[in-house]
Amino acid sequence: MSELVTGEAVALELRPARLPSRALAVLLDLAVAVAVYVAVTVVLVASTASLDMAAQTALSIAAFVLVLVGGPIAVETLSHGRSLGKMACGLRVVRDDGGPIRFRHSLVRGLIGVIEILMTFGVVACIASLVSARGRRVGDVFAGTLVVRERVPASRAGFMPPPPPWLAGRFSGLDLSAVPDDLWLAVRQYLTRMGQLDPRVGWAMGERLAADVAARTGAPAPQGVPPAAYLAAVLQERQAREARRTFGAPAAGGPPAGTVVPWGAPSAETPAAPPMAPPAAPSWEARPEVPRDASSDGRSGTGFVPPA
Image (cartoon, rainbow, N blue to C red; front, side, top):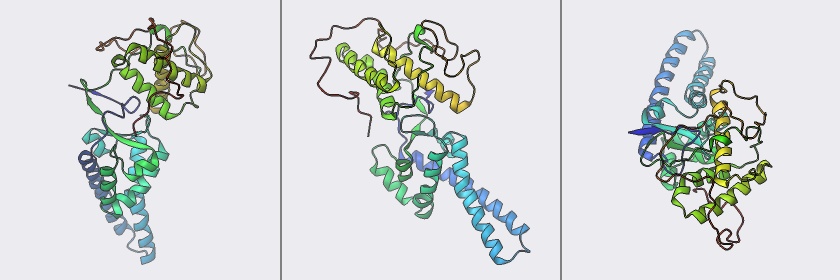
């Protein structure tokens, strides 16, 4: 049995797509695009027989660009990274931080794909994917994207604990635009692995990450809130905003955008995640006894390095 990991919460370091599945998805997409291009060409030839040769050539070039270049870009943008070939192979294109791609990402991938896939018959794309540690082609590098597997085995998917119910919706008024993508990825990795860390090391790492997030949002963790609970609540708020931007459907009864939910008030905008049974449930309340030399290693930063 497997669970579906969407582009809004995919664990990038776990399941990057491999070259065979990516190649199969590209072949399926090309087959569909070529079939559409042939049909459009037949219609154009039949309807423009009275035009001169220059006009027919211009229309043929326009059809090529529209179908074989613009078509994949439009499909990838509207489907948020899931073309027909990728849906058949269980793949999706996401940003480096795991969020859904937008038009500019699809545009860069599509334009560079003309050179590395169409003009070189996929040779450049295959070499780049084999050299890259995460299987990225040149278009992915310039667009800041990654092709990942959507169907992740449940036994291998990292469990990310939800925030405490009394923190749900507490940070709906935060400005998250200044938080960089690599910090979001570090927070996600920390939350999925905190159950495997030594309690003292995990607490110190959570404090450093919480301080980095608070420095960029201007809103430190409320008094008495453990750093892991603060990070989980802020990350859940970010994922809720990504989902609203992606699907355009705010939760019914939720507060207006920019409204700060009073402390302890329930929120329908960011409901608590369904109960799950992680291997080792985290404790949001108890702070371990951390020696002074164990809580800081003298270095600044998040303490978590995203995968290359």
